Picture 1 (tube, helix red, strand yellow):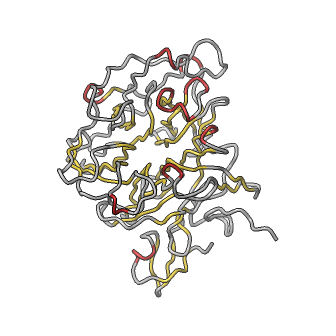
Picture 2: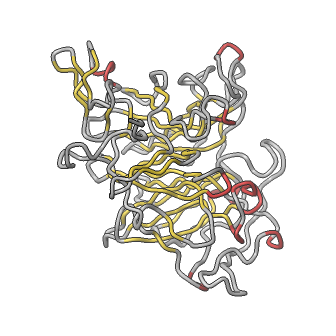
Picture 3: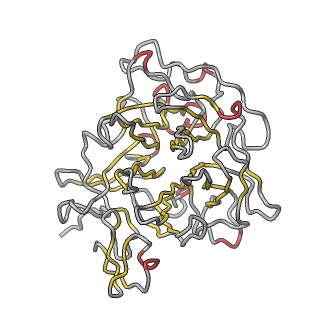
Length: 399
């Protein structure tokens, strides 16, 4: 797959992922493909590729780095050896650490393995609020599932004592789908906590116009500007009948003067074609916005093993391109040159350096199905990466 080379008239034609030089796309190091629409990843290190908790499964999340150089991963974590099929009763959010941006991330053993949030909590998405320096953990679920259904959650030796978490206030009934399908936020002065629920665990308020295509906020993913203005990207349903979606989930955006809201949904239609979920939005060193999503909602668009990640781009975070499908997917090239064909790669999130350079790519990776899911990480390519080692992974063709 070429690192650029597609025809262009402007950088928009190159997915805002590179320059248009002499009518030809030239990609930034972390993008590839003819029009720079696909993530450009280094071969994965099997010993340093995400969260390690033998016997336990996880799904999504990404780390931030503290001043001491430690990376703190907040990840969706399946308690009590559950599979992803039990995510609405046994998904929690755990805290793991590493000295490397891709891990291995490990959860402390015993009573030090305190959950950040007990079940049901899912879709961990951590950001730092620029005006205050406060850390914000966004998630689904009100963390109030009966403890009898999931305790003990985790113990590295599988002993009788599992991770515990303080009691949570029950979220108010009504206004969202069963199980707390709306945006909730925890806040903390450091990545080690202590974490406290925002607004007594009542969730984020979003106001929708009367002609809105949806009234649901799911998979919350905020982008906070230096002045505090916040764009909240989310999955909603149903997609408009004219949208041509193969599944009912589409992407929208709301805005508020600070992360606390209240938010106003900005458009009566979704912001990008086709359908999608799990949005993550980041701004590159040149100030361009990029959104990565899972376009394979309900497995309606791609079969298992087929790259079905979406990439859309924008100059202002509001007006977006359509998505290029196949921006990433479940085929991994290891350091030794061998390949692994997985089933599903979803929940994309991006760890960036201080200057905005993409550093590491995190996903939820179903190895053979959703029943063996792991938080997975790979480094992005850089200008110094060895030639021929990077690019969208494809299985070698038979001779």
